[in-house]
Length: 315
Image 1: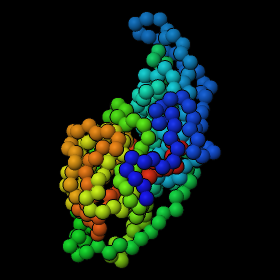
Image 2: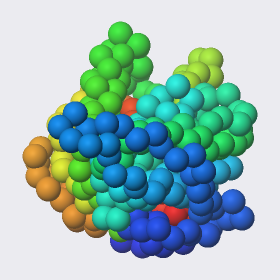
Image 3: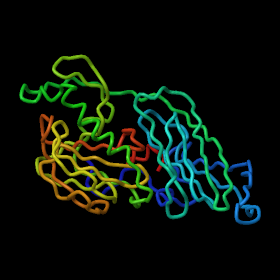
Image 4: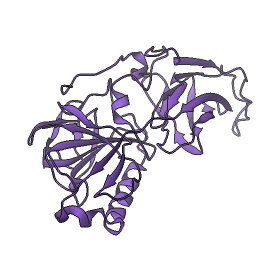
């Protein structure tokens, strides 16, 4: 059982985006020194740009599995940049002592070794890039057969669920260029994990399809739900499938979602702190019992929320 406000796994200065490594595995905290000096550019209003040392790159973990979200921190005199990984691009966001990006591995990404290409712009206008290889392994997904009562079965129709999923995809695809989270990520509710992220499901004896998009935490009706980290509430409304749902923007393209709530304790536009109560456990939407459905999105990719708290992402 996990309590609200407690953190599983190791945390370290990497979460504060400082230039130090964090070990929660043999391959965590990889430091990459860029060997290629960026080409200087001419300032159109003055002489050639002053030379600035190339940055360093810290990767929280370089051997991951599907649905992971490692953190890449780029340390130096940067003004901007981005990271491209498996054909998805993540903007670098300014942190306390570096620029950073969480990168997401989709549940259906093919295992293999992929370059994470880091393109950066230095404050003198020089540009450069480097690659960090990240090995992606397969995740063994659980499977389950779920019986949904006739009163809810119509909500499983793609014609009903697709518009809602599109709405959430649009929200999760947003980008706020500020770091709104701070410190370690917290479990949002007390209770046992009843469904793992990515579970493959059969509904009412139908075919096994897709992946469960979040982590389910079993908790009694009305139990408090807390923000996994600080940020801004960008959604607090009733949805047909997810029920009463809150979404928090943590900045830098990272979002957390809390579904099937009984009632809300936060409103859209509200700034919340890590551990602050935002709602209460319920069974609204397509749900057969009281529980919290907790999900995390990185750059529009749904990833395993639990790995933000148990050290599996390397932080």
